[in-house]
Length: 209
Image (cartoon, rainbow, N blue to C red):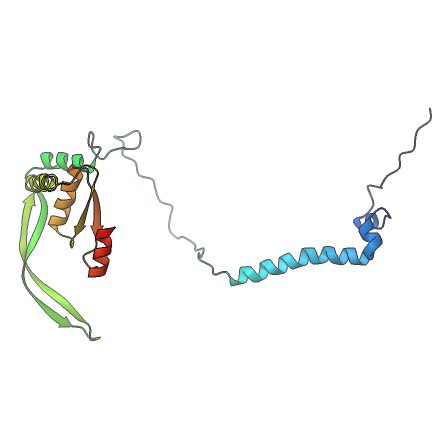
């Protein structure tokens, strides 16, 4: 039986030895040193550019070691799954406040203090601060706060606010703020909060938006 001789590259040949074969046009045109030089440039240049750009990028995070023992996950044995609503049957903010008001009718809900006087005090660095002198707390129960929220909600509809419209609240943090918000929630109005510290131009822009 005659065995045919199969010709081809030796798998044990190195890359440099393979590049010397005459069937490579690049080797024939530029020579082996030119091809090797081009390969080295193609490898070295991207590495240098990557190194240069990585040094210019500011590090935004720093890895730190967290001390202490590992924390524990807390679970409530009364519930076998995740809680979807804070109170059974209360699927909205308005419903949650209404149910809380019915359960804790006479409990304290909102407390306010009457302004007696105010004065400006100069700090050591020259800045001036306003110091307020306030009276004792006067409390609204949950029932009283809920009634005020309902009255506010009725007033909004009387003024022409439609369902799913928006209402802006421009006020400092106070009892009337949360009462107004709860009134909006009862009529399904979107509350738009505007900081009381804004200037006139910013206030006009917010209202126009």
